[in-house]
Length: 149
Image 1 (tube, helix red, strand yellow):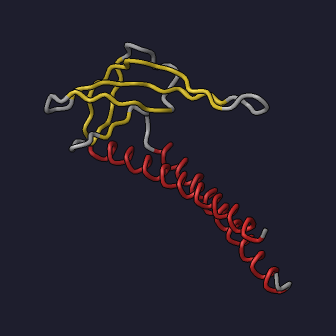
Image 2 (cartoon, helix red, strand yellow):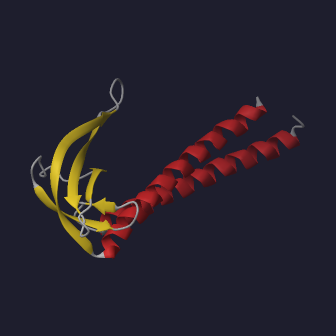
Image 3 (cartoon, one colour):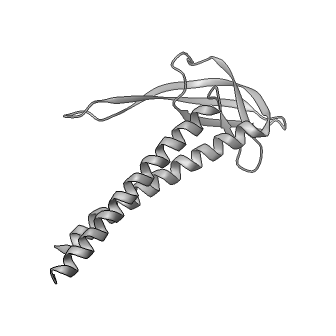
């Protein structure tokens, strides 16, 4: 029974840290695309919605866009991005910012500040959650040693 009181918070901590890793990775990739200064005109090839939830919970929908562009060297790059504007439709031409290299990193999102704000809020939430879980595990350790369980 005591092992369960350690296992559940440990699983929550690992899930939160995994999510925080992906947020920081996405923030870093978008930042590198913006910092590179390279831009290109891209065509929106496809727009579709991803729905999450349902049943007893709210349904959340996020738009995903598929873009294709040509780098300065003539390499054709196709990428998919979540959270783009709902006004961008198939066939539209948009400006993408990209970082060249073996794996081209690109974004068509209009602005740099959004990623930083989302990353900050997500990391703050992750930090509070980790502290609460670790605190809970410490309380369980102290109580179980005091009661000799």
